[in-house]
Length: 305
Figure (cartoon, one colour):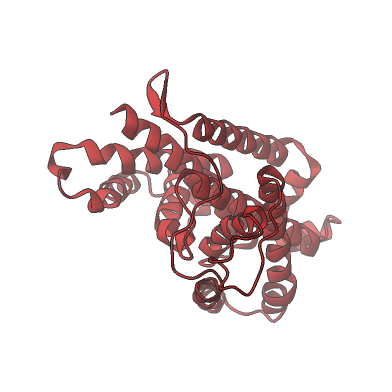
């Protein structure tokens, strides 16, 4: 049980960070981004490329030589690359769609197509083989009431710190207030002197950086796969919806709940020999909760649309 609880906290921190990113983007832009998983994978793949030894050529089809940088520097650069990628998506794709008054359903279809396209680019670039960061193995240790490696404990602490920082920034800074203003009404915020285009651009960059960080976390805890973001995308949506769509704090809590439920459910008696169904238990509980509180745990009724 200690192992399962530790695994639940680790999966929870991945889903929480990714859910906050997704919720932040949806809250400001009203875009349901199905390419979110591919930005997560970009964070992991970029970190692997930047940090792998120079003679490590398998991953990149012998076409590109890894840079062999310091691992921490590689992680930071990968997060920045994800932010740049998100900014380019807004400037080159989603802003023109928005200015052209393209409907929400059409934009949703665009994100699905973008997801499939980018995911298969990763398959061509990084191959389908599972890879790991160049890090030494560590033994699990017991901390209070859960087991995990010292490295994974650092990931958990950093993730919680980042989410608290994001919450404070969104609540108490001018940027956070501007984001909330654009979320409530883009037209009224423009009348108030807020440049909504710049706020939306910053939101894309911030959301993508958080998604990239979630990808780095996921790869440190597990491994690097070309479709790693897609594999947890449903859980990310579940965490976002459970916490309350458009609420960053709700996404944090919802992500942790989903992550812990998924891993702890493995230890249930009726799950013996059926661990591949562990996601179903968490999603089933989410459905039951939403029957009684359709706006999510921390959501408001007016946000349902």
